[in-house]
Length: 314
Image (cartoon, rainbow, N blue to C red; front, side, top):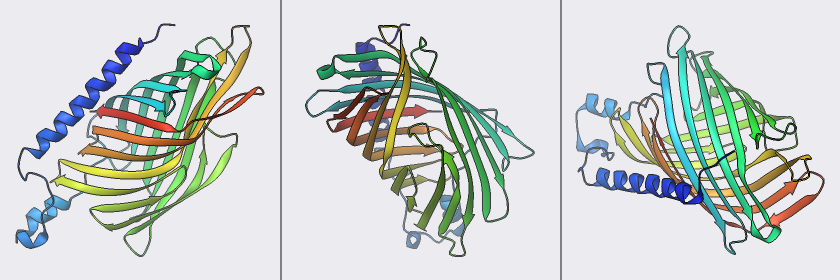
C-alpha cells in the first residue's frame, strides 16, 4: 500500500498553514467588519440583534462538509515523530425540518509513526470510518444527541484488532440558570480498554463572547475574538484532554498484533467558524505522559513534545 512521501506530506501541511495565516492577516486588513462593538456605540437594536444571532451548525443542503487536515508532531529529543493527513466528507438529511437532522460522514486518515530509538517506523497506519449523527429536540430546553462511528484501524494486511467503535448518547438540558447547560449519558471510546463509560458535562456561557466546557475526554475555555454578523466568527480555544489511537498491524513474522499511542494534550486553537459549518483552524498542542504500547510485549514511555496541525473545511 503506497503512502504519501514525507516531503509531500510536509508540503501539504506547510501550504495549508500558510493559507490560514494569509487568510487571517487579510481579515485584519479589511477594517472593522466583524470585531464586536460595544453596545453603547449604536442604538440600532435590529443591528445588535443580527450581530448576536448564533451561527447555524448545518447547511440547508445535502452536502454538509468537505475537509482536509494535517498535523506533525516531534519531541524535544527527536526520538519520535508522528505526522498524519486526513480528509472528510459529510452529508445531512433533514427529518421533517433542520431541527431534526440525520448527518453522516466518511473520513480517511493516514498516520506515519517513527520511534528511531526502537527501530520502529510504520507509514501504513490507516483509519477509515463512517459516522452517523442524530439530533432531536426533546423540549424547548433539551436535546437528544446520538453519535456512532465504526472504524477500520490497521495496515490493510492484519485481520484482527482492526475494528473500532466510538459511540455516544447524550441528553443536553439547559438549566434554570440559562447560562448553564448540563449533558449526561454514556460514551464508548476507541482509545481505552474500557467499554461504556458514564458521560457527564457542564457548559457555562457567561456571555456570548465566552464559553467554559467541562467534560471528558476534553475540557476547554473559548473566547470569541470576532463576529461578522450572521456570517462568521473567530474563536480562540484553550483545552486539555486525553487523546490517542490504536491500530491492528501485521508483523514481519506474519503474526497480527495491536499497537496503541496514548497521551495527554494541552492546546491552543485559533478557529474561524462559518454559518452552516465549515471554516478553518490552526492548532498548537503540547503532548505529555505519552506511551506507546504493543499488546503483550511493549510498554514505552515516550518523550513530551509539540504538534502543529491545521484544517480547512467547507
